[in-house]
Image (tube, protein in one colour):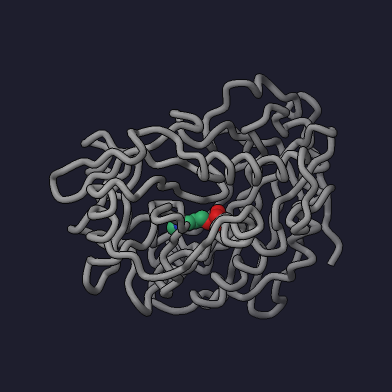
Length: 354
Ligand SMILES: *Cc1c(COP(=O)(O)O)cnc(C)c1O
């Protein structure tokens, strides 16, 4: 399928101050769009000036949340080259998510091409500062007007680009996380392991409570026993104790993060022992009390690696590593970002240079 290209008016293509960027509030002048219907399948892929979209008020996505998305980044390297980090893995996960909520799969090659062309058109919008990047957000949603609960016959696939600075306003500084034993995010057999809108709507209430208490994000426990650590709002979680790096094993209700996977692959090559296993919150709190839990961090495309300096659980708050960034956390952050910005050789073949 040929991608049709229509460019925005020159005055709409001017960039502006890319210095002090918020996360996900500024968008580049172009977007990708493709439609699906039962008869034609995916068709009419096009790149066009960024604009609002029109939706029927009965569009299935608005009522029943049949939708999936991805989040990946393009980095402006120290050598002036643009790199995508594991784009094929993100596209594969988009299709895996789509399958779970009965959304028809998209052609990975077409998606990759669309991203490549879109970025080449809006390349002046990639911030050049280390830590900043161009966030790429593909989203697919059900557009058929129908108030009956059914699988939609029509979809829209959109890709938008947003220049972003560091994810947390704290920067690469420890964040405080809040363990909820009241709400749950995802349950066995549910949709916790895919990126679908409803998961995030379900997480907002606990997030609001956490923020009111001064915490950045929620740390979720398993739905069944509220005993095992699962993940943070939009990040997977790692703990370093007893000279081992631990992360919860994928249970089906945890999002299989690509940054998580990168840490699992990278750490052993740096001499760090890693394990995926069930980790109970009691074990974590106990290890903090005994001072054997040395470090804790979250992983995700948006923040890459985010040190955790404080955990709140059952009316008490606990400092980790005196609230400071740990050595392993810093090492992994610097290693991965060095690959992303082309400072270190990418021996894992994670990046694709555009
Ligand atoms: C996207 C996401 C992550 C992180 O995944 P990455 O592929 O590393 O960006 C973790 N948890 C949730 C709930 C997410 O939505």
